[in-house]
Image (cartoon, rainbow, N blue to C red; front, side, top):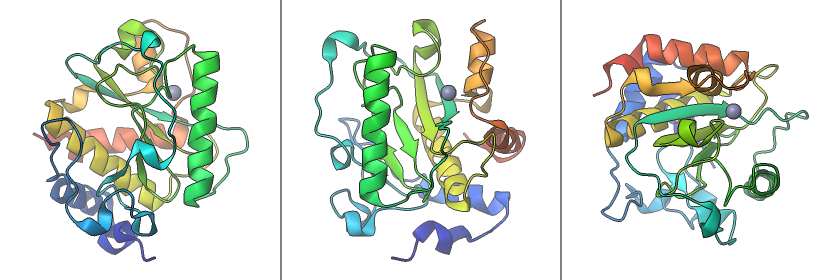
Length: 233
Ligand SMILES: [Zn+2]
């Protein structure tokens, strides 16, 4: 499978990445909040043509059939912010097979249920090392990622797989993250000043400091917000 993101950008410069992001950000949510996929080749269920480069997201059903624990969930309410995380795993594994990533998402979900007493995986989206975007917690529900209920309110959580204290983002991850951010900012009217990293949102709410999202992802976010994300309307 040749990766679409690679075709679009290869190792293109940041401006080109975001230009592509703006183009593909044309996909809009349907009335029920589900993403409308621009072409059958990128629809979920066709895992052989799993979307790369953030064109569309793999549905939750691609990695779990587990039910949400609704007693532990709150409705999302009005969306006003996005927060970006890294996985921060000690091993920093680079598996990109669909089955490997799906298992990794199930492990993250299990840890969030256990550690955070969460009703589901805490993030709304995960971007794997191949740049695929995976739908995680349904957007209708408030996330469990930012630090406390107040910080999570109206705040979409995106986790990029890897440990960016010591790994670099792949080019596919950069493209997908820029694309997803542009799409979410447009859909929900979020300005660049409301696109946070985990360490920033924790600071804003006076919570315990964290290294998340790791220095390399923090640098990339700084770069995106200084430039291309500032002009997203
Ligand atoms: Zn985090």
